[in-house]
Image 1 (spheres, chains in turn brown, blue, orange):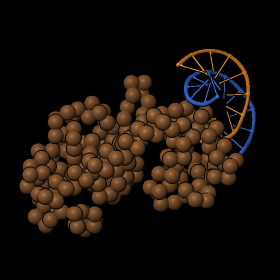
Image 2 (cartoon, chains in turn blue, cyan, brown):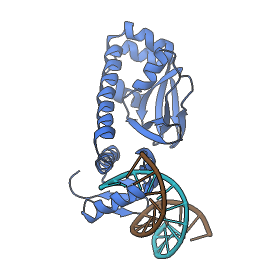
Image 3 (tube, chains in turn orange, green, red):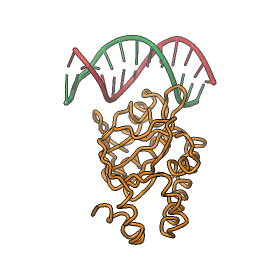
Image 4 (tube, chains in turn brown, yellow, blue):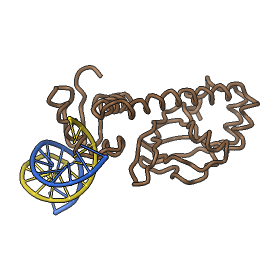
Length: 210
DNA sequence: TCATTAACACGGG
DNA sequence: CCCGTGTTAATGA
């Protein structure tokens, strides 16, 4: 549980950490594993220890739209709000990389809201952060042109991987931004001509400041 | 005007 | 060969 303490040790009081240890279930996931499909009921919420989870919204036509990434030290606001109301999942959760996490039963985490100040603060903070980020995403979709959304996506992706070298295909990008590959290829080519990046097969290297 | 769909050629792994 | 990529032409919002 050492890596657990690394991200949550300073956030929760000792008593709560003991409860998490007692009731939490340790789960490992391989890259691309689907944790949750849209329409399923949610009975647990995850605390991410390592790796990255991707939260997606699904459209009727089967198109996907990236909502946000979940990083170590975080929990999923969407999952939390769903399981509080015993609602069906409106989202799809996929492991972007190999993931280590602890899952907690939905009932418990409700009680903890009253019992532990640190838990309440943690949940409030993740919901607040997520809300802020979603507002930004909505802004992107509503008001920005696709080229700006693409740049935003690349910047985020590069930051997430901690490297200017991004491993992804045009097809994957187009799916996450809910557009067609043709458009992504064209926009990327333009960015390459502008010396903003270099294109390889399944790889993009960002040049200069991002 | 700009996105999408279909179609095709190129070429690297 | 297979698949990701670069491009174009037709069509639509």
